Length: 337
Image 1 (tube, rainbow, N blue to C red):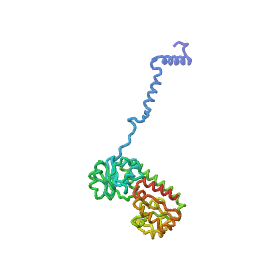
Image 2: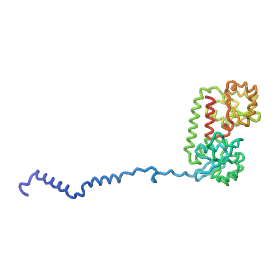
Image 3: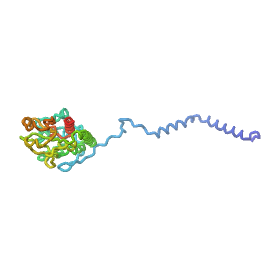
Image 4: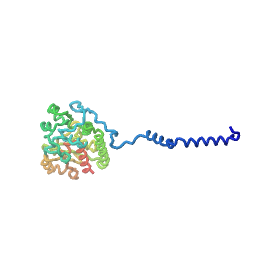
């Protein structure tokens, strides 16, 4: 090396010269690091899902369900589309879950659908009464499920040949049936929500009435067959009054085995009810008017204090789905609040 090209200054000059030449060579690589870095970032980042795209998760189809009923077990492989009900309370249960029955029996003596359901029963084929459903009409509807009660035991085998058939106890707790129908329709959460909403509703009303009704008794009666039918504490409508709402029954109405008892108009003062819910309709309107014209009736403390509340018999006795039950609670609230 030339003697003048020595020392740290020369070494630094050589390093700079090498770096400058490296940066100028292969110009096609300029910026290549940036491009590679962007490509790597795009490869690692997960793509955002597009709403409605085929990659979006689909709900799993309803699994087969097995329902316990009076005839044992019935397994349904899929959600039934055409359901025929042989008691209007099951029409109520279906409608509460947004499902219209394909066919239903009529209600009461009016040969019509329950008035409280209004237009919800439009286009539902009527197939006779629950005592005598029209089997030929059921066949014509080509159902994939039939729901009946023990009143239909005599035609159960015939119904089974038409479609899978569930037989529930007619007086079974509506909440129990609601959960089963929720399973049938693949809507168990919605069925439970209806029950939860009801429980919250009656809990609030119970609290509101607790102070006001303290020490006062409430009776549920229905004039019938020249007598008065007293609905006892074990009756399913009475259980709304005494169980769900915590109201106090007259001692005469406390009975855990018989749902009702018959008393004469002369015995009615012994009932000693501070409040009376009086059930009537076209079938007992004349008998009710006859009782109301007597001095025995007029001298009842509940009558004198204007604490007799007239309600529709079919509404309170015949229909036991959540729609009807909620209406009963509303009527109790209106009467006692």
